[in-house]
Image (cartoon, rainbow, N blue to C red):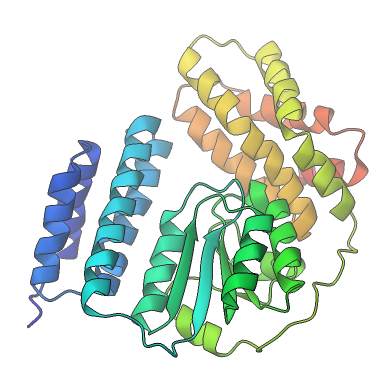
Length: 337
């Protein structure tokens, strides 16, 4: 029998445990809810997913440190993995269950969304190979050859890694295997997914099993990227650290770094902002840059960055990319509103 739960209160209690780095309490709370009849999918939907969104908001607002955010995410990953193992002890997929591979894009360390997708598929009877964070294209393809899955599902939270997602889509489709992509790096309309050659786009973990079931059994190689700026995408991505350093120097030459906290955050996040330009170019979607710049400005403002920092950031980025015509277009002032 399932006991009714006030999920908002449960999320607050769970966040309290995450904020203190208390894995024991977090796991105890989740096991208690399992004992009341709530399955893993309900816990993902009502507790773990909403709590993770709140963790991100708390970091953006500077209410939590980056260490708290990392610790909280690690606890939720451990909790969900523990639940998955406990469930598998009593319910294993049938020998003829269709297999899928779930993985994060290379250099993508936000593994919790992919883990949630893996559990949704396991609950629907799929045999899941979960490869976790930062899976290389070479390793992923080797595993595809070993397993022969029905599909590969790739997760990416950061738009900076869309060029790497494209490379992995290409590599997997060379094996004839369909590729489903998802995560906050993609737009809900699926434009970016289609642009990089994915077979399908999963807007959320819910319904992903039905999506996989409807995929073709085999796919041809990914078509080449022919839109303007596609080649520049990989130039920007490859040089993003050097470009980020140049932009940081330009910003600090325009505004006074009177509070060092925001400077550290600027330096940490600039490679992702520069990478968003590469993401915009490979996915043929300038909104990737607009969103990244708007997000960066909110993060910096919440850390007392001086007035004008956002303007200096946009100008510094435009100056650093002035030799690349397609990149210049997506970071032009009228494109970065």
